[in-house]
Length: 467
Image (tube, rainbow, N blue to C red; front, side, top):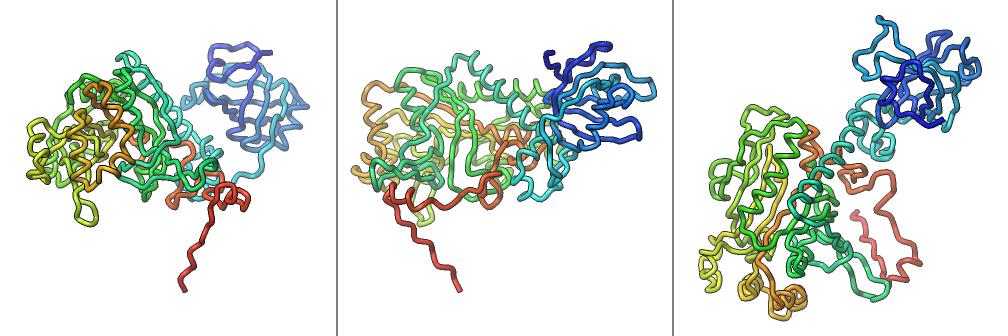
């Protein structure tokens, strides 16, 4: 007999079906035993009557929550008084004729048929595969899939093509520390995990693809908080022969379509636009919540922030890039840049999208003039030699016919967090790290073996603990 999914049982009264799934709840009513069986499509009530299936009834004495069962039975309509309106299958039940235990479950560290938010974080992540069985977490991960699918469909229709870029790359300044990967074949040298596919997507524009995107993984060794993880996912995109507003229109259309298709309200359309100076003056920050005191979680208050400073100051007071070193200055500020004038007041064609107090996307028009790019590196204090060593590959690529281009990197995790009405992005990531950077389920970071270290020509010196 072919397996039937629970959602497909509703209109099959009188039919014999084969169900497979997990025991969500077991209830013993004396002679009759009731189970709520769960699969990926829903819940259904199972009835085991000793008169109908004595062997199955005897077997249920050892069944507890989260056992995996295979059940054959007859779908019957419930009596009017027994209908459960809270369940889509609440008008029917399955009377068991055969039952097989596919897998047993030990006593659970916490109940998964309840909201697991109240469970200790360390325990939740240790048993994340159980945590993900809970209704809320399952719903969040499926929502993430929906959003990813809709983003792909939207961008495909807009003429973008999806291209993967490497995860092993070269260290590059993107505003955070790199994760380094030692090379076994080239001792003493390191790859870096990408903080973003920034340079690769610019190279793809030079390659002539014109409209690129990918659901990109990015890694940044930075301090953790509720809306930030060591790894994140972004809907990375880049476009050739466009101006700033065209990028904003594409991204605004994508967010609007996804949000409204999921039943969310948008505070204002088109999205309001604030310059960086206006945002700081009005909200004291470049990310803000336009909803004011009306914090309706189903209302998304999107807003653009544009015209960011081209340069910022590092911890030592030296000028560095504000977002990334490839952001183009506003056309009217190019001459001042080239003459090193009024540098702290120059503005970039750099833009962010904020929503309900969070920055959920960032992008910019890229520098496409080699003289301007070299000047930016010079102002950052990079010598010609250092510029060549770090960015020579990109600079030389520009010498072979580079189109003007611009792009953006909408953050998938934060957007899904908003759509799910969650306050922490761990709630919408299948296997996140905890607040200390410890991975879910697997014990990482962990020590390498002596053999591994020897192959990589690495010697580890553990700092002595302070007395």
